[in-house]
Image (cartoon, rainbow, N blue to C red):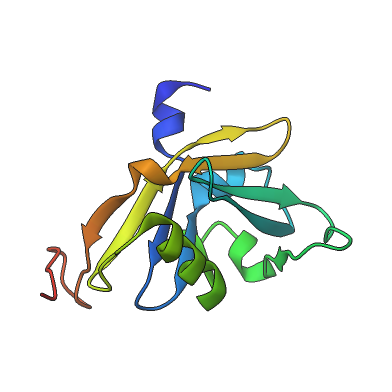
Length: 137
């Protein structure tokens, strides 16, 4: 994968809204799967997104609604208090005033995007209808 494509593989965590946002380029790099599964490795500090065509038997996966698969959507949003709390526990103290972004890589053959939690970057939250990012602190 080229360096420019790798920089477009992103996911964000929003602790305040308990939201995980998967950007369109990441979703497409996974092969536009019908289901996604989140994987966390707390020992190695990795977060991964596995693309699936069918739900995994005995596992938990999230169905990607049809309206997210259309070209008009910029990202897929999944709300999960349990997953966000697990990430907060692994990473440590994160502020609810920020959104946290991870850049990663995709293994297209195995349909998995992986992100190191060591490279998490805080992005100040934007207020609605403003183009400039403003911190709420």
